[in-house]
Image (cartoon, rainbow, N blue to C red; front, side, top):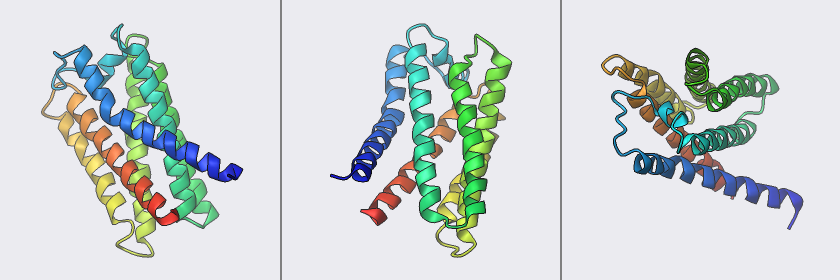
Length: 194
């Protein structure tokens, strides 16, 4: 087996593990805190609870790395122009750094900085997904349509901040959309490459 094939297998295994972690880790958090209510508490609450803060940091860091790996491969696979790749990678890099800061700066350490880094992640990753699809739609309307729709839904999910006193519902919907987009982009690319 060649070096590139083994790296591809490790990367794909890591991405599948990350997707499964993103799907099943909420069950662990709900098991530890069955009285958690996203209507009144943000999901970052798990980052300050003593029994879950390490696992919370682990999940955020793994998901941040997986999002970057998946998106970098997608950028290189779908876009050929260097300036487009550089533009998308810079947005992606900024959003992933913001997500890492969310993991490292907990709400009990500095709540304002935590909220700022979370806000920057939500806005820049949303922008990345939307622009990813918009640029793909430039040549073929059908190809980037999914990314534009999911990016728009991410933006519309901010409306959920209005009726609720917490960020919890918005965060759950947003993270679900991030997982859905990454799963679709990953599986489409794997099917095309083989």
